[in-house]
Amino acid sequence: MLYLVLMHRTTNMTRTLTNRPQPITPQVAARYWHATRARDRRADGTFVLAVRSTRIYCRPSCPARRPLRRNVTFYRTREEAERHGYRPCLRCRPNEISGPVALVQRAAGLLAQSTEEGLTLCQLAETLGATQSTLRRAFLQVTGLKPHEFVQALRLNRFKALMRAGKSITDALYETGYGSSSRVYEGSNAQLGMTPATYRKGGMGMKLGYTIVKSPLGKVLVAATERGVSAVYLGDDETSLVAELGEEYPRAEIAAASNGFERWVKEVLQRIEGRPPHIELPLDLQATAFQRRVWKELQRIPRGSTRTYSQVAHSVGRPKAVRAVARACASNPVSIVVPCHRVIREDGALAGYRWGLSRKEQLLASERSPG
Image (cartoon, rainbow, N blue to C red; front, side, top):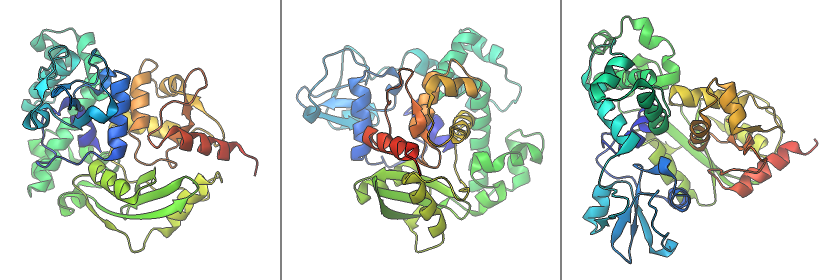
């Protein structure tokens, strides 16, 4: 989701998605623990870890000795940790915003207040007392987007908010600075997941139906709108899969599907078994421009083949954005359909996979097997 992906990193800076904290599922906690063990700076600002034995909370990248897993609990924001009686670490200072995250937060505030389409990167950098290259690197590191892509996303968010508030399409276009209706209708399916008119009629968001079936990889959750597939999750526990769907699409109307997309589910199962595609599955996804480029490139990787993160980065025209490519793979909500399991490390080893390395290995083996 466009808004979710952008704001998840620049805030937990703002909590505009929902006033209720979403539950941290076991799968999410496992990803958080992996980032904690790796001291992954990219995860800073997305969650904090709290140590029960010391009553202290830290950033994922904290240089302190790693606590035992059984002593750790995770919170999405420092405010949540402090409400539960934890104090900020004096080494990593998780209650302070600094570095690229702070720069992007200040830039995002200025961009959100600006209604002028012509605010340039040069003007923004000068206002913030930074160089253009520093600001560009900070945006790519924190959001995975270039500054102008972030500006487009903010404008689209304002447009969507006005539509939800009941504004007409014409008024919403005018108030958000779009020069013409073609600017927002152009590629609207890719950014909104639906046309502006449909989005306005849809109220708070998409209507998602889901079904859970058995497969060689365990349980498979397939969720879809009337337009196409929006999620394909792999796991062992049905409750966790449904909870993660709600976390990924917090504003959607979600319910078990009685019927309507059995053909799509059957196609997903056939691909899991290593068989070639029989039909082209329609997708209804909300994503950043960069994510969409990466996911389209992944769909071009032939069955039975692999690519490295570096090769994918070159293919999308961003050779230095290897980490951003890895993040796009990790955030892919439609496994199997967008085959992120076909991306490996430079040394040929399997890299992290959202649904577990054993499943990644099994998928690649089934795709390479003859017949």
